[in-house]
Length: 447
Length: 138
Figure 1: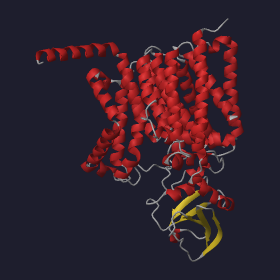
Figure 2: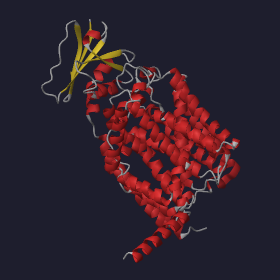
Figure 3: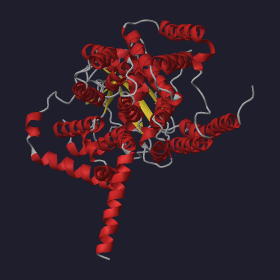
Figure 4: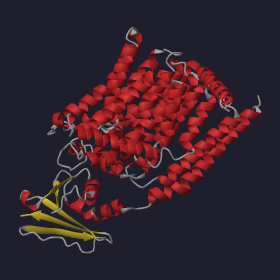
């Protein structure tokens, strides 16, 4: 039954986005509809669980509500309801390349998959999900008695696992694995479709193939479901902002607020992202009341659910409890350890990204003043200060989490760089041509 | 109304994509996810313990080692017992009347589970990989 709820939710959300925004790309609408449906189901699953409402009522409500909306829409617009899905919109050659990329991505994902995933995937996220499957004992999770399970972590991924397990009547390892695959697919499809929406076909395919035909996202995409999930939700608001100028519909702005706030429902880092994003969005659009109103309207519901969880159920986190963070903030040695670790990791594992960041500095330095970069930089800076004040052993904390933070930020950073470059492509071409001319003049002068 | 050549070609490509992806799923994904690991072996060894202890009870994980040094067995036992709660604790700090678990990983050949005075053996379960001793503090 839950699969019907998911399918109907996606169709209903797709129709809503199709009707209320000017987004034309069917895959972009589909990816957004998928993420929106998962978010709504997760929020309501947890609310129904906290309110002790029977799971059958949850299932029935989320089959009937989208079904009624779909029927109303189809009765209103008939065949035109799905008229914007046209597989002839894309050239056969580009479709062939994109599907080949997706197949390579699937194969790499499947080969790297492990039953129950890697450490955090089972020890935190799936384990929390197992608690949430039991409507009478779920509150057992919210105790400090269980060592190192972080019961204060948000519940998006655990609630989705629990929802499917409960509906299937079996706690199968396929649930987190298939969910992880769907999330990873949504991530790469969102990037491709966002470029296609703005007709940046070549740069879109380039970034897409970079993510799908190489192993840059692996093995983490297949083994660390929560980090890929967060990477997707950090990406969505930035993607939607890139389509905002041409399309200032109330729903689109509401969705930006909704998805930015929902990232806080995935991991605690998402809350930092939401605060930063909301601040930058408010500064950028401070004269546009329509945008701000709809943005915060979209953010209210996810933030209310998060607050209900944090203030009524979650025990306090370990970041500030019994932690002498004042002394740590003024300990220069900690800054040096983090800098050295980050430098070594990035130069050994992310050379390509560093070259691209250097390249964009030369070709289009204004990217570093863009909304997207400021948010991403702010998030990276806050990760840095979390390491400075961490209550855990600093070297242990860095070695067990730094790669995951890079995995969270990598897709949104890569996407933003290439999208920004695509928007400024004519300018970049002229700069490149000037550089080339100067270079050839120098060669003539000093043969 | 007929379909254009582009429509037919794109539809055929999409169809082919779903077929190949399905084959890859069955060929690579399913065996990886079905391959039982030591979480499943431990879960299997803990079946009787789960039936014996009420879900609402707290169970103590008896160990003399620091959990942080070797957390794997503790974590995996907790995972298998969820939504039950497993508390890692030294014997002397465990309240009387509590259920306690000792888990022996048979890969570690020279490990001998310590005996404690004032405990009642409830059950001993084992498979090829783990031995689980359920005790109660008198």
